[in-house]
Amino acid sequence: MDHGRAVTLLSLLSPGIRAVLVKGEPGTGKTLLAFELLRLHGKGVYISTRVTEEKTLEQYPGVKRLFKQGKLSLVNPKTRGAKFDDVRLGTAPIVIESLLHSISKLKEPLVILDSWDTVAKELEHVERMKTEKSLLAIADAGKARFLFISEEPTLTTMDYLVDAIVVLKDELHEGRRVRKIEWRKLRGMEIPQESQLFSLWDARFTVFQPEIALDVHAKHKAKPFQPVKNTTEYYSTGSKDLDALTLGGLERGSTILLELGRRLGARWDLPLLASISCNFIANGGCTAFLPVLGVSPEMVDEAHLSILPKEIVESSIRIAHFGETPATDTCFFQLDPSSLSKSFDMFWQVVGQLTKVGEGRRPNLTILSIDRLEMMFGHEYITPIFARGPAMTRYYGDATIYIAKHSTTGKGTLADATTMHLKLDEIDGALVIHSVRPPSRIHKVSYDYSQGYPSVKLTPVA
Image (cartoon, rainbow, N blue to C red; front, side):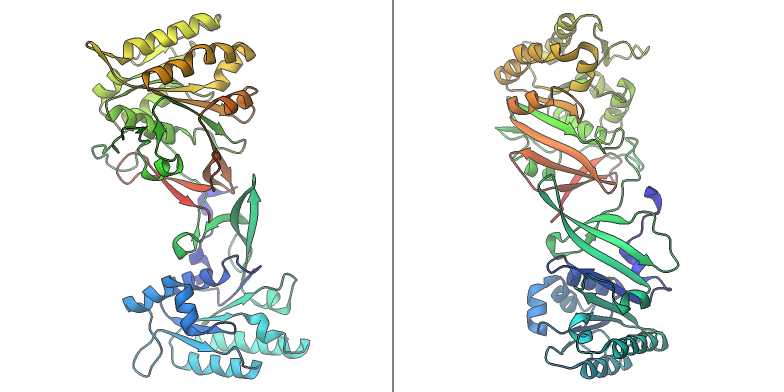
């Protein structure tokens, strides 16, 4: 999968694309896709065979806003913009006549016919093909673009004539609704990835691009980290979106299971965990971290150093390992790979030292990789974890995140015993997250590096 060359909605407005066919079942977002392209193009004609202008503007406030902002306006002798023609009761000749009339008044418009099925079903096969060829010839002559909306699932003559075909689908992913756009045809362009997630959230058609940059290193000049403050009952995750998904953040005294899906890319979870940890530290806490397999202590250290000053990182985070790194960094400490009990004693001893501040104690966030423990000690790790970990977390009002990969055998036991179960996964190259318990919809995860460090943004796949 070539993540760096994914197509976008702008591909449908490329110079070589004059006619686009948008297919899909009712309610999949075809009209909203058309309006998004109309917004990107800047001017055009919308011809509805189903609803009036008033209902269209009422149902799609994004279009109404465009009119109010003056980016698109009704066609009149003095202006260029978007025109609504109500042809619900019209025949095919009336629709075509309306198209010709509208195109003659606009320069290179985007013409949307919603829906073409209503018109085409009145025509015989040969007449339909002649009509469609005539429309495409009109598009070429007038430098117009045509977008045909269709709910016909089978191949029609239009499929062979247009330059581009996209199909919108509603599907289920682990019992949750996801929306996908399939790129069936893009004349003159490669389609490196045939399917992508999209969302209709906030009445906008948003296609989610495959993840191409999940490096923890900032790509912009870092600015001072601005933490999200905790509340009396919750530790903030550092992301208002993630706080909303977790119903407030990390509840004081809670344990959370973060499951990593089988399709997840390597280290895709690290910016998320580093962001949570750094916000916890910036609010006066500390973190004890045992990374997942494939993530070294150095990677965790660098992820924190890209967000917080070195002196704060050195005083507030400890990263455990089993001897796989020769580094003697202040933040690193080694566990005993030959003894589970000794390793747990060492881990909690370090936590005790890390949390001590004078005569008092600061809160601790434990991030513990279950797959690493399972690899080292088999299933025996489960009993010691629950003999001490959750009880200490509740007693001190701390927070614990257990990380389990999809293949982790003890994942089910942890899921039943923890306060919340989240799952981070990949769908069509996009990083997504949802809450398994309590249940939530799926959200697209984006890492915004504009501040120089990863800021977690979530968009519902709705």
